[in-house]
Length: 282
Image (tube, rainbow, N blue to C red; front, side):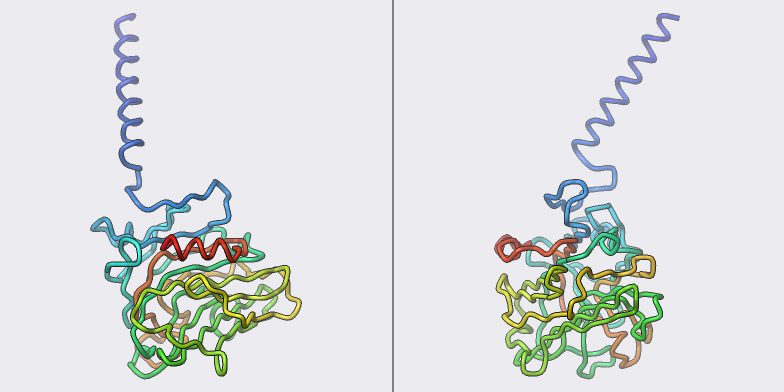
């Protein structure tokens, strides 16, 4: 009996040691980029697209919740930091949800690096918008979305547009277009974009390469962003919310450039924090 107990204790010790070594050497879900963010911290979604494995789903994993993409048909390329993904007509990365971002966000920040050369195109090759991110939704909104980000134009004059529909079907466009378009955004270099919404001011600030655009767009006195998380049916990185992929439908257009370091926070980051992301190539 005593011998059996000793053998059992020895076997248990070996198992515990092996598990401990595995935890130190390699996470059970594989190695993927982490970011400094305490449990319950403001960074709610982070995909670095670092492409360090042969598994495309691992290369697109969100490391905040180990949230794997449902599909990732995009090619891994050199990024601003490590690897990135290359967008393609009619293709995009699909996630079920942006974790608990939409449940918790009152203010928010969306931050990413992108690289695009020249005129944006729809999926049939004519001039049109391209989408770094969208939330496909069954909320009944005419767009089939409750949030998307558009980059549209050419390197001489590029528009940035953000549409948000809240849970009450109130919607708003935060746009930098017309006389407020921005030159130099599509020059085939890595650029950092951050979109910061403050519930306190109902305003959205656009940052390019760490510098705030002076044209702050405001949603009246809307306050909390108030997105309905239960209506998000799909989060897409690299495409709009539409499903007419092979047509020139502007809502179905996909991103044709490169994307890297995609982050979503449930707070409005400060100017110095945005500058830190740019300087750190994060």
